[in-house]
Length: 232
Image 1 (cartoon, rainbow, N blue to C red):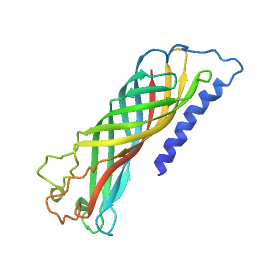
Image 2: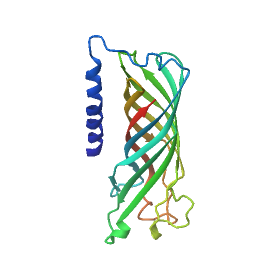
Image 3: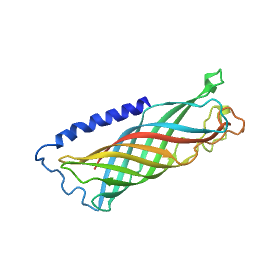
Image 4: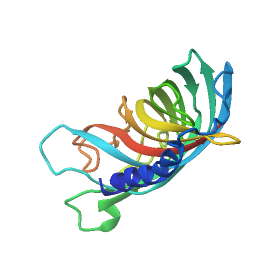
């Protein structure tokens, strides 16, 4: 929660400066035809913070999750539908780390699991924009995505009894967010904040159904927030 607040504060500090600059009496209009092309291309950079949402079988101690800051990088392909709607495909790479803490253990090697994930994400999104105001335009964006977790350990014969935390390789999500397009003299710059929420269970249970690490977990689903800086 603390890091999520930092994300939002940082985002608004970044965007409020350019917004103030656009409220001139007669601003010079940059890139007037930028959004009129049927296809547009770009790339994004950013950072993220991922978490897990657990669903339990019994009312026992929760699994604690310590979150950290990761990074994002990817490409953008956009198809114009009309003045206000665009269909976007944003394949990207997301690196993140979450540390899980389990109660009931005296040995730290048993109580702690570092879960490092490298997701290749394939989202199909609908971008809904307001009418352009000078050199800026707010928008909301949302859709669905499929991800591949390159660090899943799904096919490993070892499990938590050997120190290996396993997750499914394939993951399905829905995403929603908001941002602002800024039209500079040479390119369109778009900072945005987005949430991602898994639809599928990511946990691969241990071989022992009574495992102290996975036995009480009915489902484990990724959720997260990320800030992207897009250049088109």
